[in-house]
Every structure is written in structure tokens, then in C-alpha cells.
Image (tube, rainbow, N blue to C red):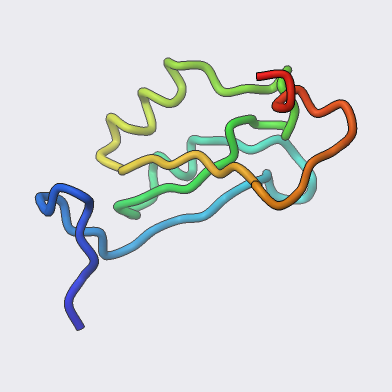
Length: 88
């Protein structure tokens, strides 16, 4: 089986991590993801799932500097009342 390739074909994606919340109900911690050997990381935009807990640019930059293609997860099939995303 051939590995999937990133959009420009230059970086083979052979493993990935999908983490939207922290373990045991805690906030999402990027450190274990940064240390992982995954080529691609899909994460929530926020450590806590709220606007107040958004990751900083520096935190996302450190994840990308670890060599991972980084994608932010955004649920498009659900919306909560008063969701700040509706105001964008």
C-alpha cells in the first residue's frame, strides 16, 4: 500500500494523531503530540474547547516546527446556542 501524500506531494504522511481533548477530562496538552512520531496532527483549536482556551500562535508554531502537518478540527454539523463561531 502506498502512503498518502501531503497536497504538494513532497511530504509522505504515514502516521497521524487525532486529539480533540485532554485525557481524563483535562485540557488538551500539545507536548505529547509534539513528541510523537506522527507526520500529521489533527487537533482542536482550543485546549479546553472554549474560545478562552485557544492555542496561541507560538504553541501552534512549536507543533509545526516538530515536523508535523497540523490541521485544526472544526465540527460543521453541530452548533451550540451562543457559539462564538456564529459571530465570525
